[in-house]
Image (cartoon, rainbow, N blue to C red; front, side, top):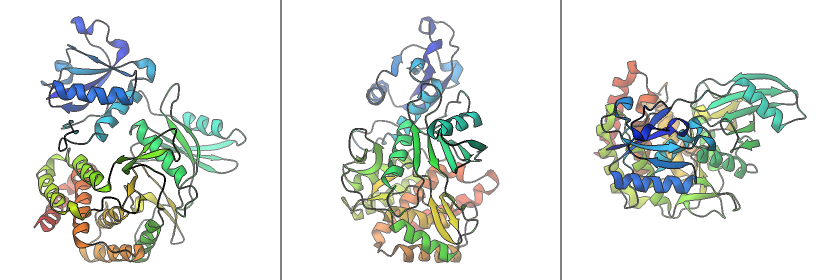
Length: 424
């Protein structure tokens, strides 16, 4: 295996001739051989023209402590800086399909996100709102705890806003999220209104400013709220005039400015599961093959071209705002897709029983039944098994992030039981 390494181009002079390499770097993925590396570079250079050049012979083995490392991708730091560009490349690795299809050449075993040059500060957030809304006066700035990207709540004398910096996901994912929020601006789903989006800053991270939503994420989920979740999910609109199915990608120059990542919804679901299972958490990696087997046996039940709605990827209570028992906000539309809403329904039902304070079996069944009743659409058994396998694949990939060390053993046993039941 050859490591794909991201290196800041300013410090590379002399390295190829045996000089000492003293630059920032991070491993973003692995390829099987030089042929796969060339294919990967072709895709990346096509997506990010002028940003990447291959560098051969850089002595990275000792520095990275990976005996199989030795192939570098060098970033021209004048095009955006090490942190921003390295995260772009890492996102490209994330978004590449796995090796199952002829055009899927990336085999990603492990990835370490590079350290950033410095997180955006409260002053950066204040300036972002001041630039977007020059007639309003900023009165308070507070960092939002948790999450992967950096978020700030900014209050002005006229209202409240949230600034989201793309310090973790790639720029394309952020651009697509902005486009999806704008696409839903006139829908019956209460999403934030995008006030400003700076996706190509001269310095620092890209970001966008959106209106703050009322309410708060719910502490507990009752059957009544689960039913409202189903009703709200059903409100995600059908979308015409967009090419393709699958993950929505930013597409400047077309109206609306998004396009699907696959020709059919079935192709996307196949890719989606492959992508999740390509990097399973170590403690549950043996569950990847049984889950993939379920998908292989049920994939024909997935419609090729369903009525195309916007499909949220992470529809769960933590990404909702509730006030007086009503859902008043829907957040986090990163990686939204165009296709069959029933995938989000089945995954949401799974997540209701697998949160950080998971419901017991009886309670989880009741919440899931209420969710489905609110959605009010049939999900055939074979299709449900396929979509449930996709939900299980999400946990298999994110297991170490979902659960802390003290509870992983118990949660792994529960996960094994669910996989065994589904695959049996």
